Image (cartoon, rainbow, N blue to C red):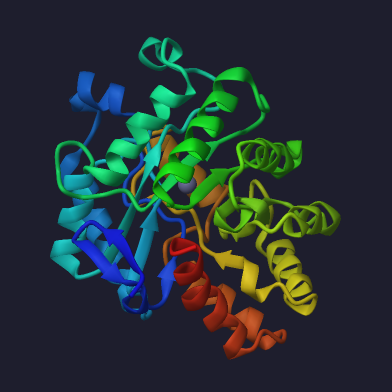
Length: 317
Ligand SMILES: [Zn+2]
């Protein structure tokens, strides 16, 4: 029996059910939150997280994968509270989310030492709890594969080789980082069937996407609602084209939604939400995207493959 670690311990992969592969129940800078807690409303944070968990469950979702990491306030007790109060199953990662900067603590440790840190979360538990990470998270964005980012990709690769867990890599298709990330993982000897290139759905460049798919990785069509990167109609056209080409068994649908996010002051955040990402939510897929994809030819079987089979296969790859 293949199992995967959740915030409530290992679960049989057959119990995962319909899964959102990339959502965040809270995303905030842990340094700022620790130093200036008055900037944060913890009651509001938990209420919004619980509401979103209940919202996705009302659409049949059983599991949410929350790929938070260092710098985004990954918080195992917070995630467990959301799971325990709602009944949703939550899967956590280990890793460092950065596009360039690394603190001294990791600047002065090599790839293998960083891999040890990641393996600790996978084998022992996160933040002193018994909650184990089920996969690794890396990020590469506009600055490209700079040395600190490369170090983290190599560390994640080595931790994956050591523990067997898969890797999710945040990418920026507009600068083609996905292929660079694949190159590093490949150099480290990672089985590319364990690698998911997140945010591939931010582009409608089918040549780039097929180049990635040809390497054997999974792709995240996982930012529905973030129109600033790519509007919904283009995301849908891309997904439909890839379904037509037979890639249902390599794709994930998700929204990269954050129940709360501290990137802007609250009033700016509200204004931006209304003007830039009016549809973005943790349930947008079910309310508008899936109905439209179905109307335009996506079969129930393809949907089941993307929402149920692929999460199971990637998490237990
Ligand atoms: Zn994310």
